[in-house]
Length: 471
Image (cartoon, rainbow, N blue to C red; front, side):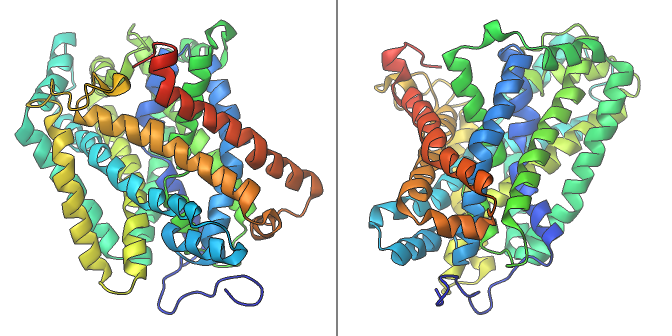
């Protein structure tokens, strides 16, 4: 830190080439399968409109202030999450306990990649299937069998999983500007263009009236404590809060980029993408007379079935799964970068070497997730823990990453920024000069976020014991 408390840019450390490059990269990290896959099926399972309103409220009230905090922490220190927390704690002489935030921020995304890349690999498999016209006129049994056959084949899953991870490693190895920024500058605008085109197509050929009613006419009788917690968890998952990506990407920001404006753009565009995904999927689902509460299979079973009976099904199906791949890829690159950035900052290894060995480690550990859909499908290694008793390796990874470590890290970030670190320094870094805005941000990170995130964490850890909810 220099005399003003602002970290100088380490010699040789890259920065984004422009503000737009930073925005695209950060949005790419936030907009992923959480928006295109998880949001539609969770909205479908939780009554539609009521879930959407609660989700949007949480995203702006709880998540947006934390987005600002993470970007500010990264830019102030110009370090990866591990180095950032060490520098911030040194600045205010706080306990080394808070270094835990940095370690969770670089290790949890690697765990997430072990199962996320398996699901993302499905998008590549479905691009290949769409390209061969497999969805045209497909029957219900054939749509279900297509997905079941993919999951039952370890060899096929390994192929797509390996191909997907390999592409991630290549992009990460090329660095910030030539790798991450270059890919996002192409994929993110393409993603939104495809989303808009598909939404228009779905409104012409589907049932938009029922879709809009389902998404925007809330039935507040659907609001339960469990639904509120699920909506908050989805908001965290979809905007990349506490994943390490925001803090890491913030560390490559130049000082002429406005953190406050960037944070609102990230939150708003992320929610827009989730909404557009719903406006692509639900008109098609309702127009085909199918169940919107299709669960995780909504995208890979229900949607191909709906697409098969539509005019131009070949092009719609191909474009849709290319869209899914773009969203997944820009997100998973953001999961790789926190760890690779930390290891590269140490200055002992080249970025390419770190990227390759990190990819190999994720690939080896992710084998457990691949086999969870076939050979090890019924193997429950933690059967002695009630909340994990019925989960295989994939389920354990998914649950611990999304329902334990993610809210835990967000909870710790809120406590650190709201109660431990100097709030005035964070507000200065964010650019909060309006007293009302500054007070609202402080109230959000000091009180609202810890209470809400603490509730999610307690429910995830002890809901099985207290309420019998072990799903």
